[in-house]
Image 1: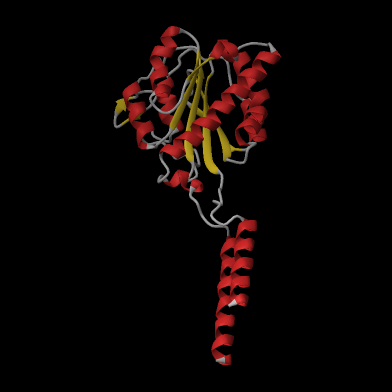
Image 2: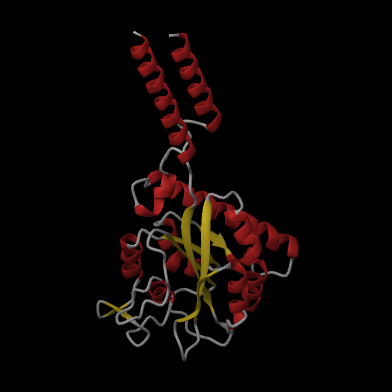
Length: 276
């Protein structure tokens, strides 16, 4: 009996050392599409985004709780609206691609661009290679209300894209939406998509600046908000495939050690029966 107790004690100690009952947490996959207005007033914003995507990424993923990739849509160029600047990729390659954003546009169909970012326009090839088990995050930067959303720019179900249509697409995709905006009309036009889909409206004026300290503070605060938003989304929706990384799964080492302990008990029991 004393030997059996020793095996129990050793097994319990081993399980405690490796953390029996501790979840093996894997990072939440997050595919983020930035939608950026390409009109003439957005040049500084584009530069700041390109130069600070590394800070955004390190703040978002530095805790190891989120595994993110970054894609980019440009819109507002009257000849090609909207367009993919880069597919989902790393922060460094995103920065390189962002140098290709333009500032010559004058029409800003934000609703159409949002549908485009979700691969949802009629007849659209699935340009963005979303991971099947990733949380979709859409982030838009603009200083103009959505305008020019005509059928010539793109349709969903045969209709020009509206705020209501984008709202439905976000719901269908379980997508998060954030808006970095300036101007009351812009906030009225686009803001409800953010507040209605787990996101927030951020002040574009804090990012449309050459003040380095202000830019750093904005990016850090923004990325921290995105991190908390993603974690909260999965806390509220733990059964979604995108949030399965939060499930409590025993570590493989725990299971192996438990098996060794049980096997040891079996050996002692057989010895006792033989002696009897």
